[in-house]
Every structure is written in C-alpha cells, then in structure tokens.
Length: 392
Image 1 (tube, rainbow, N blue to C red):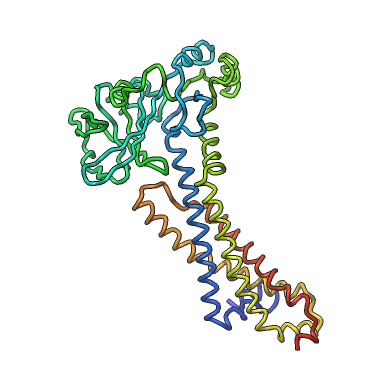
Image 2 (image 1 turned 90 degrees about the vertical axis):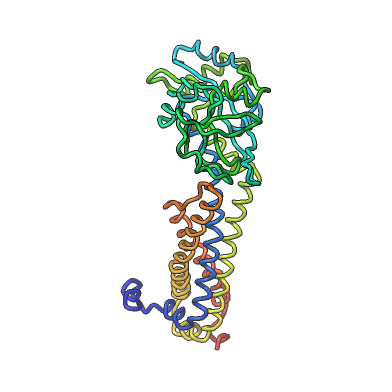
C-alpha cells in the first residue's frame, strides 16, 4: 500500500504512515466514520422509503391525466371528494377518449390475533382495466361478483399465507367493516408510512363497505387521452372548462412528484429525516476533526521541522487531506455493510420499501469524502497560524 500511494502521490505517503503508526486511534476513527455513515444511511433510507410509499398507489394507474379535488389534495389518500359530473364534463373534450372514477377509504382490519392493520381500499370499476397497471387488468375482472376483493399479500401485522390459494372459484372468506368478503385473488403492493396494505374491490363492494359514500362523489377521476395528445395542453384546456378552483388536473407522474415533494419538505416526518441526515453529517465531521486535530497536535514538532526546511502550507494541507480521504475511503465500507443489513432487517420486520440504491451509496461516499476533507482543513488552523520557532 505504501508503494502504491507513493507512486500515486509522487512522494512518501506521510498521512497514511501517520495513521498506521497508531492502530488504536485509527480503529476508533474508522468506527466513528462508519457510525456517522450508518446514521446518514438510515435517515436517507427512511426518507427514500417514505417517497417510495407515496409512489406505490400512483403506480397502480396508467392513465394520462388525474383529476383531483383542489381541497386538501396534497396527498392521494387524504384528498376531498369530487362530483362525478366532472368526469362527464371532461369527456366533452375531443382529446379525452375515456375516464373512470376511483373511490378511496381507509379501514382497520382486526385479524383475530390481537393484531390490526390499517387497510387502504380502492373501489374500481371491474371493466376499467385499461386505466390500471397491466398486471391488474385480468384480476380486476374477477371483482365483478359482489363482496369480493383482491388482497395485498404484503399487508403488515397479518398472516396472509391463508390467502395464497385464493381464486374466483375458491374465494377465501374474511370479514371487514362487519361484512363478509371473499378474497378472489392477491396483489403485491405493500404498505408504507400511511397504511399497512392495499385492498382492491369493485365500486359496488366499496359502497357496501362504506355506506356513507356515494357513486356521485369519487375520490379521483382517471382520464385517457387520444394517441399523440399533449397531456399538459389538454390539462390546461380542461381546467378552463370547469368553474374556477373546483379541480386540479395533472399527469399522474406530476401528481406523484408533487406529493413526494410535499411529504419531504412540508410534512414533519420528511423534515425530521432531513434533520437526521444533517446530524449524521455533523457527527462525522466532529469525529474526523477530533482525530485529525489530535494527530496534528501529536506531530507538531515534525511539522515544525518541515516548516523550518521551507515546506509551504500546501504541503501540510496535502498531508492532512491525505489522512482525511483515507479515513473516509476506508470507514465508508463498514458503514455501507451495516446499513445494508439494517435495511434488510427493517424491510423484513415492517414490510416498508427500504433498500439501498447505487445513487444513495455514491452520494454518501462523496459526502463522506467532503466531510472528512472539511474536518482536515479545520484541523490545520492551529498549524497554519504557528511559527516554526514557536513549535520547538
């Protein structure tokens, strides 16, 4: 390693040799850097999991436009209802080829095992498969029978193994909202921070489960456009058809991105995750600074000798940055491994969509390098202000 670094740097790798000279301090420093990385990875993983949870229900749809209520519509599940006549008004536009309403409500499922799960119900028209993900088009047809459902095998806190063999010919019975339902199939959607699972039912079954809801007041409306139609242009033209401030019309991807942004920047949970990332970075900077500052203090006489020999400040900056980058480059990997293990354990225990991404790993690695480099520059202040005569 010494020979490799010597060829790379064009000089003796003094920073590396100083780190290796005190193995105990080196191990403590690497542990500190790894711990700071784990803190950052955990917060970024939870933030990414929340963003992924927000995106899951949107990915069930594949229409061109989504009509939402302008009131309380920052999130898909909490938005106010719409008059169904908004659908018929939209169908007047020449570029709108079809539309379907969707109904959403939440209920608690008591599994009978002292456990409960918060279930998000989607009420859909069984013959509107073209508006939803291709994998749902076939199973949706089976919801034509009353009081049937497609249940989420990734629902938290409930043993879903009994539903694995559910078919339209052999439905698996269960009870929700005081009503007997039959599972005629399964989907794999998963929960998130806002719920534990997603069940799909027909619109008529939805009204049986939630008698306070009416077919005249859907939660959202999905629109399909003619091939080649510009969604942005059509959305603007449709908005002008309605009375002011009565609807919001967006492409599905735009609505999803807006909700992710809202959850991450305005909701307390997103702000807490951002604060946790900042705390992790501060911890890493402080730990690296303490190690590098102690190293500078321990070698002041040696640095004084170099100063007296005429070495400029850039030389010392290079040595300290060399130590900082080595600490970051080595300490990152145990932090990455422990974080990956944490992600896997958390995903197994909670079923939330948390996983490591290459982009996140690269971002944290670069952040670790920059944080350690900043610590090294801060640790150089004492040496920069000192004169060689004062150091002997």
